[in-house]
Image (tube, rainbow, N blue to C red; front, top):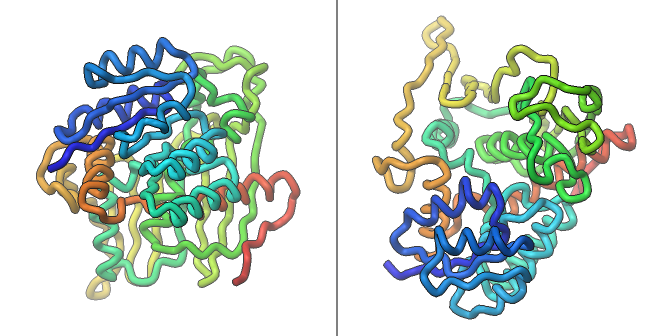
Length: 360
């Protein structure tokens, strides 16, 4: 198996917690260049994960100029995802962009078009698809076990889970709060399971009710109300062209004891799942049933039986798609639709109106 040389753009928390450790476990990967606006972070990343000759930059365009780099991971704040990813694609690199794909639907579309124009692969870091539970449920749905799925809930709610580090609370850099941060994961997973990427309209509600609380109880310590520029909770109602409906529920701070989990309702059965639990309900021989499945965490579609985390599986299948010239698990058009729906939630909340998608 040939070696894939990778450049890392953005050496912050998501790079250190997810991408670089996962890539480091792959024998056919070499991280040969690192870029960050804070040079010390890039230097530390290069020392820990890079080849002996790894280069360090503060300008990502210098990294893109290195011809031997085949793949770039864009791990920067949300606002710069589109511009860096497009430049990377145009420079002849395949791109893994951390979620969300972009802050706006137009930016996401521009990334998708750059992928088509250049012929380079583009994927987005939605690791929820990489879990064995998600892949088993997908297989069941494709096999028709739930029938036609016409209602679903994409849930990512925290009672008090406001991230107080980095730029999470900075609206200019991130574009939003929990909806664009964690709601994007749940929405991506639900749309992928339903295989429905034809939204018709969106109604959204965005709240700033708890963010001004002084000395608030919070998993990661009290937040500074003066720095909390984004919403603390947001909700969306999405109607699709075939009549299906998805409700999005997301929060960093919400007075809720138990937010429940994602659910799918079909004509033959339903499913609900949260964390490692997957339950299937339905009717058989005149009786209703509810089964909780004990899913083997290593029983995925690729690399079946290999023990690895969802982060590691995401990285391995992505590099596998490069080496074998096949589509990655997360396709760019799918991620583009997620970004367009998220933007519509914010737009609807701001205007108080329904946002309609093109009827073409």
